[in-house]
Length: 289
Image 1 (spheres, one colour):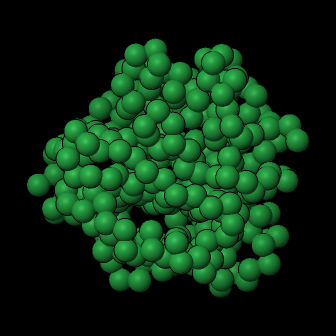
Image 2 (image 1 turned 120 degrees about the vertical axis):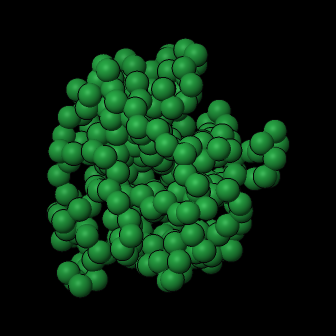
């Protein structure tokens, strides 16, 4: 099938912490179980990526992925409840338009030492090809628009841009092509966690919810009203959590619309760039206690 027709709707969850913690500890209460329960709807695979080693010099990004549902999968439960790391992202996948559920199409994609997960559908995906270096385009392993989105970012990095700048430039470059679609994403490297919240005009996929067979009461929280809204929570110790809708959001705040936020894994400094102000985008920088 033409990759321009592929679409994926997903759930994103990620945190960065000064000390190794589990996702369950970071979320508190039963929210890690609530996140896994969303696999009843987002049932087309799951994946996680996390930092191994607390020493900055020795850090690597590891991944675990499954093209099968995460519902009842003990490996997903373990990733959410037992895995200790200073930073981790978790992705739940809901594929549409006949997209193949296979490892090559399962998020997060890990390339060049960093992980990438996307929530949205950038169609036609082929519209990104002219923004991708030829060698990277030829090396694509799957047929998702998300892997192409990552390849645009990798192209910017190969040109010498730092990951945060590469992400910002890529979103700005692609936004005119996909003005009404979701570019929400999470990127994890050995030095930073980056959250893209660029979905201001994206339409909620009500048809997918209707086709799921779930009752309104069974749909995850806020899916009808704020499906693409990305939120963050900041703790006094410097821990930062990013998540798409579906969790209990008491104490959380919305990420600015059309923005990219970076968390430094060593200093815990947070930098937010408001992309709708380009070319002189505003930078909001602060250090958590």
